[in-house]
Length: 67
Image (tube, rainbow, N blue to C red):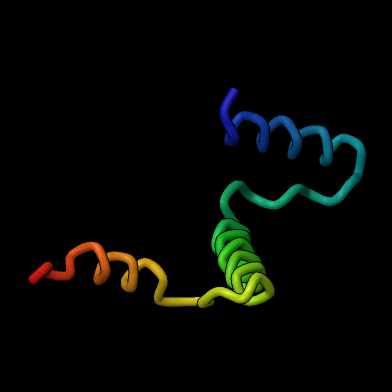
């Protein structure tokens, strides 16, 4: 069963029981991704590390020409 099937079952059940309909699949995906990103940034700051630019900095260190 995929998310659409589960949504249809939940919608049918909610309609029969008079409950509010569940949110459609994928409606909160962007909000969840932003929350995860913000949490990771917060944890990095609390740990005393840079909150942003870490990937670019790592690539810059890795690709730096050795002379």
